[in-house]
Length: 259
Image (cartoon, rainbow, N blue to C red; front, top):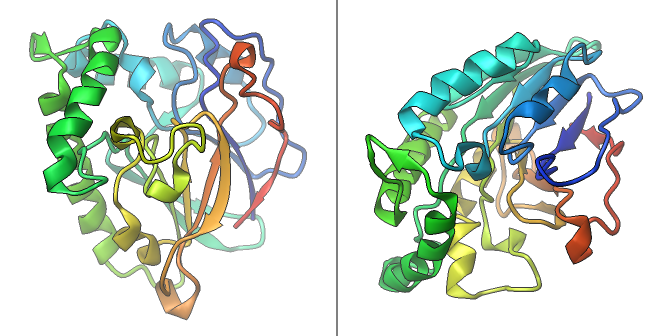
């Protein structure tokens, strides 16, 4: 089965016309498509199913509790399916069965361990102030982000711990599952914990892990052995990023990913 993956298009400011990739059986949008949400209409009438994972910028200047149902309705209006701590089943043309496990997976800031968490949160505070979102009427600050991130992590662990015989598992998050996905421009800086989580231990429980958030491309194997003795999850990021910063160099919006 082949799929198309897009993320970090930032259509609120960027000029980009998404096109269906020939041969793809589904499209995954892994977040930060358009902070205004207007860009989602470009995917209406897409020739294959479209699954959406919300990115952090989908909540810019919004109340989190109100935005989730509103974004779900907005996506549904264009025939797109939003996944937040949800599983979707998909059967490919060749009869192969897949479970698509989706959640934003906010940062828990433990990428470098608990001792480094305060420094990571201080570095991330800038991004949260710029995001200007609220949760329950209070600022969506790093403490609130961590709560959401830990809830996403617990949900993922629960789903991935349940056996799925004869089904291949595709996990989709916006935030990255490993330090290996760090942007090489910034590497091991404390702020990287606002982009990557230490979910390496979950990689052996999946076949493919798709993410966005980092404005660079990645394609690597996680450690260990995965389901049914297969290699642990292949991790792929197909983010476009910002043209003005040179981040789109090498981006191929029509790239197919084999599962």
